Structures are given as structure tokens and as C-alpha cells.
Image (cartoon, rainbow, N blue to C red; front, side):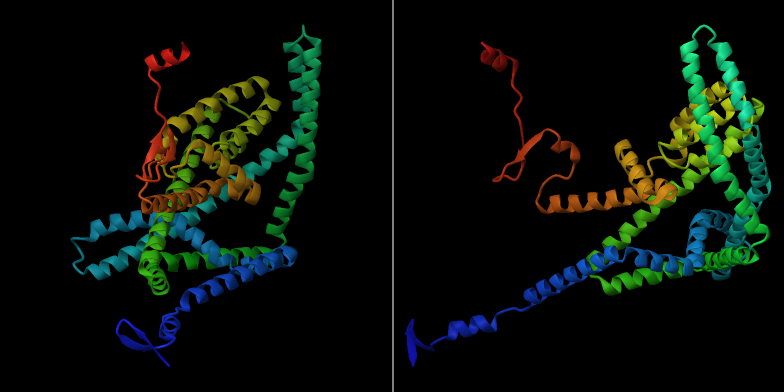
Length: 443
């Protein structure tokens, strides 16, 4: 049976057949695939939480196997600037003597890699030879003389506050509690660990060999990474462009480059900054003839790696250690640390680091607290650059969405905005009341 339509005959149901023929199944397949992926991820998260101990044990085992590779990546990342410095200067020196650029590049890369590795090993050996024995002697001597130092400090407080017995008594009780806590902590935590480490180094040959083997393999891996880093970078980019569309691949490559810039600038700058602060502290404390000079300098230098909280974390226990031996010198040390940290925060730090993270002070504190709470000391050190990368990615995503909606991406223009006009798609600001209008309204 046929039906007439606009002067022609067409089979009944042709429109329905055309709709079925034009039906696209791809969106439904994409939705089904997305739902399947979400369900699988939920199952993985549930299994990880339900079997947390097993997952943690498996993770620790994997990390133990990958430890030499991780050590190699860390060493290569840290000494890469040294290798580039040697390579660049050597290439300039050999540019006129070697006309073959390919051979010259190989030679400079090999010398730069070897020089950076030798420099790294020498620094580690010097630190172990010079610092560790003195640190152990300082800690052991401090524990031995701690009771006498506490009594001397209490006697000094009595002499200083002879006319105020109540306050003197309160301070004495506080000092005794702090000294008891420090004494218990040193005797139950620090000294047993030192003995354990010494025993492990002298008697535990298997553990020593294992650690040395991991470090040795890590040095070899670092050498391979530095010597062929351009090839590895090229292979990584090739994989990204093969898997993802070009637009998304460009975003990934740019984000990785920016992450490397943030991490590299922050970590290398912070290490150099902390080394300078530690050396300055050691020189000044030696001139002032402070007790436990090396121990305090190491504490101040190491904790200075932590942004914002580092000066307080290192300065407070150091001041207590020195004050137990000499209260007046403890006061001098507090004044010196305040001056030193002001020098670092206003002159040395900005010169070395600049604005490597781009984070406001609030987000710096937030990153340190979250990173330290989740991953301890490592989280406090790496939390700031890691959060800076996350902050950078989120900022770019928000800016991209706003530009697609034809809205400004400058934060400043949103401060006084009250809404967005639906017709013009522009920000609406609250009109400021003139003085005449305000007087008329008040009357």
C-alpha cells in the first residue's frame, strides 16, 4: 500500500526506516564503556580499602624491587644540573679543537656524566667521614651531660629570678619536664637507633651489601639516564603522541615540562639554599664558640629544606640544646637564628628560588600540612612543588573552561563581580552609590 505525499508516492514507514538507518550507536557505546570503567575503579578502590594491609605489603614489595631504579632516577635528577654545567663549559672549550660535532657531543656528555657522578659520590663520602662521627659524639655527649646541664640551667633561673619565687618554681618545673622528656627520648629512641645503625654497618654484612648494591646499581642507572636522556625523552613523547590525540598529547607534554620546571627549580634551589644556611650557621656559631656547633648547624640546614615551618622546626630544639649547656648562649642563638632566617627569607632565598612555585603563602602552608600529614618529612619537602603542579593544572583547566564560555580568566575581575549577565555574557558589578544619593537616602 502506498501513500501520496506532495505529488509523489512513497512507501509507508520510509521515514521510520531512515531514522533507524541514521541511528548512531557510538554515544551509547561510549556511555557504556564509561560506566564500566567507573564500576571497575570503584571495585579497585573497595578492594584496596578492604585489603589495605595486603595492598600495602604488595606495594612495599614492589617498591623494594624498584628501589635501585628509584635511586637511579633521584640521583640523575639531582646531578643533572651539574652534568649540564660541565658539558656546556667543556663543549665551549673543545669547539675550536674538534670539528666533528657528533664526536664532540658524545665526549662532552661522557665527561659531564662521569664528573657529575664523581662529584655526587665525593660529597656523600665527605659528609659521612666528616659529619657522622662528630654528630654521634655530640649526641652521646649531650645525653651524658644532660642532667648536669639541667641543674645548671635551674640554678641560673634561681639566680636570675631570686625575687620572684613563684615564677621561678614554675619555670623550674617546666625545665624538669622538658629535660625528662628529652632524656627519655634520647635514651629510648635516638641512642638505640644509633647503636642499631652502627651494628648494621659493622656486623650486618648482608644488609650493608644489599644497600651498597642498590646504590651501586642506582649509580649505573643514573649514568645511563644522563647519557641518553634525550633519547628517553623522545621515546616518552612518541608514546604519548601515539596513544592520545594531538591536542591532548600537547597538553600532557606541556604539563610535564612545567612540572619539571617547578620541581627542578624548587628542589635544586632549596638544597643550595639550605647548604648555604647550614654553612653560614656553622661559621657564625664557631666564631661565637657555641656548644654542639656541628649538630646544631646540621639541624638548621636540614630543616631549612622545609618551607615556612623549617626555621621553627630546626630553631626551637637547637635553642633548647644550647640553652641547657649555657642559657645566655641559648638566648644569643635565638637572636642569631632570627637574623639568619630573615636574611634567608628576604635575600638569599628569593635570589636562589625566585617565584619557582607561584603559590601564595596560604597554599604553601596548606601543602606542607597535607604533605607532612600524609607522607611525613618527605611530604613536607615535596608537598609544595607537588601542589604547585596540581594548582597549575587546575588553573589551566579553569581558564580553558572560562575562555570557552567567553568569560575572562583574570582573577582580579571577579573580586567585585556580583553575577554574569545571561544576555551579554558579561560580568555584572554592583553600582557604587554616590555621596548625593547616600545623603538623599539617609534623609
